[in-house]
Length: 564
Image (tube, rainbow, N blue to C red; front, top):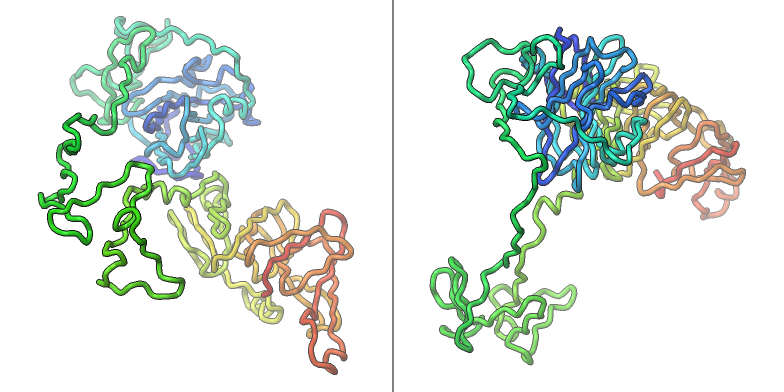
């Protein structure tokens, strides 16, 4: 049974199969879309340092034939043969990609896959759909990479440019004129779909079975699995096939009107009721009229409809704001009911399209200003999040209680910086949100940041966090506390409303109840305006405790338009 991969999953090829002669099939298609499916042979720096290992339609094989482009077969849009033990040592990675040739977006594709077949048996499959992408025009599907042994990774990462942009991304150069494709043997010569190079040994049992029926035989040693749907045999094609030879005829949306006597209505289209007649054959009456009186005809497209009762008749006015309208069953002013607007609106798919999931190929991906997604399968590291903040998850994800220990509970209760956390592990995607608060991912690269525990939504478990004390005088308890996060990873902070980020200057003050975060290198001084005068006279400003920030250029503070 083939092992199913999700985006970001990795595995040793040796765990999938003991073979090194592999078939890689790609299936990707969409209405009106054409794809260029290629393989990039990259060096240790993930650069295309040798153009001979860019395998595409104009260069179907590498010099030693360790990578070969085989074409469409066995239900695959494109297929490759990869012989791992023949790949030279300077090629450390094989990246399989698909780029659009022409207009369109990758989000328009249907369900597709990249699969690995060894010994006639499918051993791995990575499935994907267009809903995982947005406006990208190319996608990096999967990688074979050498890390002590050959491994496979399901990438599924969109790329904004096409094939030329992918080539430049990997360090290659785009030629001004594409070289002519190597001549293929004529179909009349009866060459099979996979043929050995001239002078080589007899053809191995590799590739799709021949189109003609053959007696039953054991499964081939290499190729698509037995019983896979086979592509129909290709008929001989001319050297330069013409596409869309038939002329395009623009037909009207409705049949042309048949002229008739003046004053007579044209006949209705077949299957539609005639004007003034309902679908059951009864003549329609005008609203408020008598039987036999025909309903008024709809105005031409783009022209306003006549008012109820005809032009010049008094029009009904809507009820004033806050006043009830006419009771049900009451006659309408003028004796006619208001017209109900007709016409189709946008389809459900169009309306919901702007709310689709926004994949980015990264571990943390904001979906909108109030919802964020984490992909647990990218690097396998767990995530700590505020309890109850999960709103949706996909895949195999486990949620466990993350305790702070006895000392952590004591410190949290004493400082007000206790965080009730859960630990998310497994393989899949988890969506976090809380009370429609704005979410902001902050990526730390070995630096530190101070954040109030109330403003923390989720963070990578790799980050170190501890309670930090802010000394001060003249306030109850003599100090304030905050959480300090340090290390390498992502911290997701939540705010009430859109925050503002300000640089630290000697005159920067912030309300202790509105501050969200600040750079850990900043010096914080508590400025208290509590005095005896406040107790002697009634009334005060309400701004009794402020924080003053000092620090070198580059330090910052984050303040929200809300006081906790």
